[in-house]
Length: 359
Image 1 (cartoon, one colour):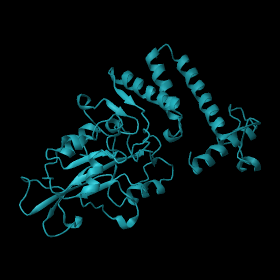
Image 2 (image 1 turned 45 degrees about the vertical axis):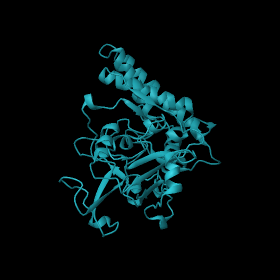
Image 3 (image 1 turned 90 degrees about the vertical axis):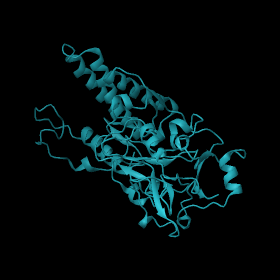
Image 4 (image 1 turned 180 degrees about the vertical axis):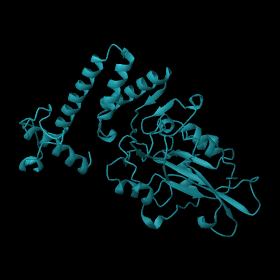
């Protein structure tokens, strides 16, 4: 929980416990606007504890008890409306309450991770009558994912872009794309300012070469450092991920990324039901809400299942190579050891795990 959320939370709990004045509105403080705060209502919690109804407890325990109380309240309302609400409606309401007060995925236990995945799967089933497969698979030991791009082989076909959009349930209306293919003129070097990212002609074009960019999954990602709510972080297998339910859409990470690897959705992503990829991961291609950051995850739902990302599989020329950097027998290791490779903006110290090379 961010420091701002902690402060808000502790102050509100303190307000509830310390003001016992009643005006007949049914609330001990706030609410009707007729109550005045007592001098102690803005006291900060001391020694790392919050006071909840004169019982000292950790903030995490206090948060759980508050969420449980609200859930009970929701159950009471649901029960009182049972004449007009069916069992499925009450179940969906309960799921929504539990999802609203869940913690940051990074801090969850494996049991809590599985519980929130189960809730999302059940919620989808209640809303659509259909099922999906969502994973909460953690990073495996001795795995560090890396990527290499062969500039000599890329012909600018953009099959990779289309495959990424379909695999990761990206919004169709805004035509969001995690991958960009830059068409550059021969002899101009890697000048992205002069590159054409929206070419509409037959490829490959004479006198040009093509270069793809996406999230580079840095070992020292600046996007993680600037996130005020810890909604993005680096996993043990090197993947930089986002908890969409904790992202507040401030776009600090977008500004901090030197590789233009982040995307912000200005509207709720829309995907036709028949096109929804139902093989999902909580930190990957599950359906997002409006106003959050999105990005390439090296197709975590595929890579942690031992498959290549969709862009690698779709590339018709074999320009894209993906694998475990810790496996000495992997293709990616062979490329790094036998080709002259380079990375973009290495002077920044971000240590991207995305290399370029030419035959």
